[in-house]
Image 1 (cartoon, rainbow, N blue to C red):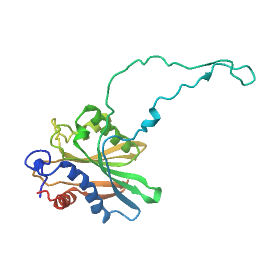
Image 2: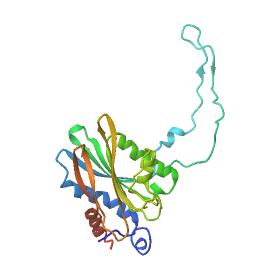
Image 3: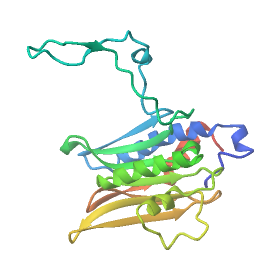
Image 4: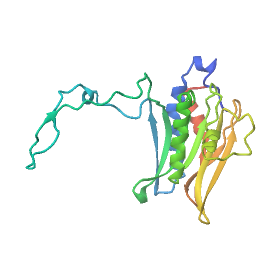
Length: 245
């Protein structure tokens, strides 16, 4: 069956998009398990909200401790005071940019679990605000610089943004196959490869559409080794398990 619209009626009234996004990475891992060479291992990774937890107790007000203002030549302080920092140059209420992560990570277990490929399933929060889009793009760019193959799968129909295009724009590149009005749902694989003392960017981009079959992307494990990332098979199995029709 083709791609459904998980963000509009009637489907969004029956099943939550979070169910699809939460289950799909696991089905991709199962699908890849029969294709990856023995030295490679894939695992799902789902992380919601903030990227770190704060120990609130560490920010509780503590008793001021005097410090030495000088010495007497024998290691002893001659005066103590409580240092008062200057007033901040900016004080403003703000939210820390956070984003959900729905992904599959593939590691080379022969080289200390080196990350070689990442499949990023875009969530609505990755596209809803400029700072969230910038954070997603920066993450993908950082992975590429580490020679990690990055696949982006975006089935979010409620945000008219193309993060693949924004990723290329951040690198000063343009994909001539993408129309002037880039599709808001798409799938793409990107990788950086060293060739003739220069870096070469290679991409595979496929527009998606509700009612259309999902493509198979190349998932690069090494410069000369790729396995098929079968989006259609894993998507359909996810929908079958979750009874999404």
